[in-house]
Length: 161
Image (tube, rainbow, N blue to C red):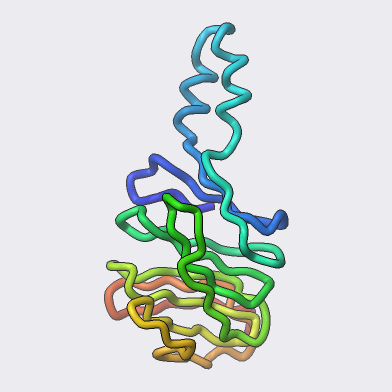
């Protein structure tokens, strides 16, 4: 699960092959209300929107700072760029040879980074429509399980020793 920058919304993903958008505050507020409103809390536990487009389990999500888009990744070896409002996939990026474990976005959401079971971190220019990564970091000896970017620094974690 990932919260957006101000914590007002959260996105979850999993085995159902979908990314879900939630407003956790609505649920909290309803649960604190009197019993007449508790019934409506059940309705508020439903997601605001479901984003479907992955063919296998979804492992990761990263939300753009402007909340207008996000990227997701999963066992289908895809990174998908989504429009939050329309719910449509803006771009599907193949490129990993095995499942994609994690994704990250740089500060202005112009570059997506994906970490894969194929031992690589790939950097994708989201302003172009190239199917090739702008950089591939093949430094790990085993599956790369996490990736983080801040400025020009990229940090990844893998299961190698």
